[in-house]
Image 1 (spheres, one colour):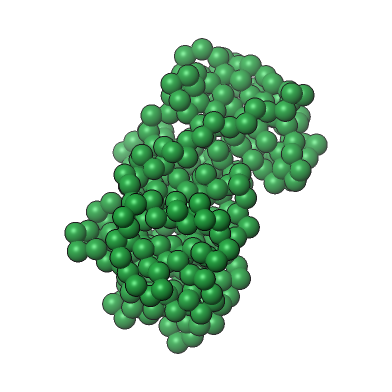
Image 2 (cartoon, one colour):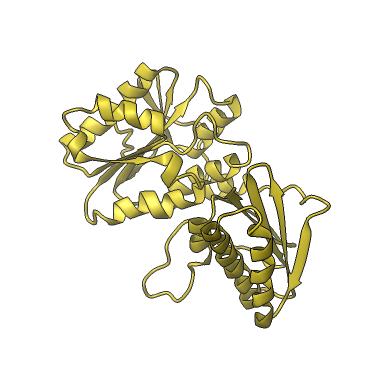
Length: 311
């Protein structure tokens, strides 16, 4: 059960399951079929499901790479470049088979738009590549709207053991753009700093460091400082006018928001590593690497990027 479509070398089915038995039947069949075809296999699912799959795959587990998606994909923006594309890149010239479960019961409303956009963009990033990526969805516990989105972001659906084309699958860029949602305003008492010249980057770093040190470890503070500096530098380099940076705390989290008048035109920015012959292009990749969640909203009037670090 790979969900292979005859018109494409890339398969991206969603597995809708409602019990542990359904979950294991669908995922183990996928893995064992891939192993039989001698394809490299990656299983990246959240912790509890990871343990169950390891046990169910006894006999072939030594031919599978396992990753805890709740760790590797805690920030959904890291999943394509640092999990999926990395695994595919480690096996050039071979069809790879991946189970990726980026959305599970317990993902927050704050994280969800980034997760759903990720699922849509997989189709653009892997278009034409020789790969199969199976995405399980707990249809018994996830909200109905999440399952509806799965039908929009996956060309093929697997439900009750049957495979069929999704009648709601849409263009990945259009679907991803529907999750480009305006972010709530920062708290009224949040402190803001304006910047607009390279000489002001030192002030940006000092501003973020001063606020972050109260809530984060020394290492986490420097990670947030580096991410904010990268975004502020991009503002100065690529957009007209000045930028603003705002920092505030929420329960269990420190938030840093960078705003400028630029328009982020590349929907794959931060989702794909730039080519070796390209100078730059790592800004959003680095930002995703350094933060626990990155939310982006871009429109003709400007771009807002919100960085989150767990306290």
